[in-house]
Amino acid sequence: MTRSSIRAVAVFALGVSALALSACGHTIEQKAATGAIAGAVVAGPVGAAVGGAAGAAVGHIDKPNR
Image 1 (cartoon, rainbow, N blue to C red):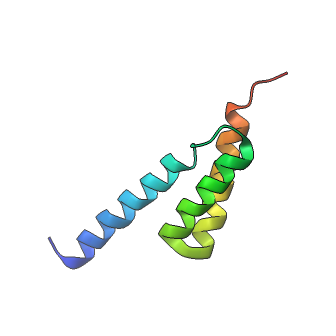
Image 2 (image 1 turned 120 degrees about the vertical axis):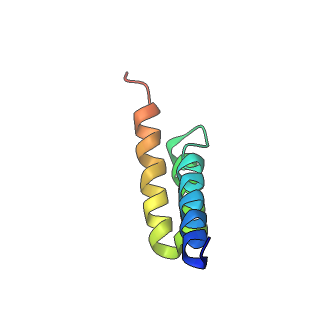
Image 3 (image 1 turned 135 degrees about the horizontal axis):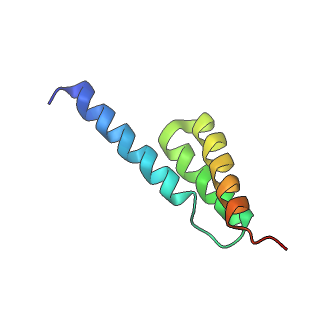
């Protein structure tokens, strides 16, 4: 494998991990915070914003309708 393909696989794996971690937590705030931290590890400030948004979206989807 070339260096660029190894890097692409690593970035993909970290991205999948970030999406999986964005679903961790019990409240919407916890899910958003976990997603933001995982996103920051993968892609810096932009990743933090995307991870936080993904965590918040997952939190709203999981929220029961009342």
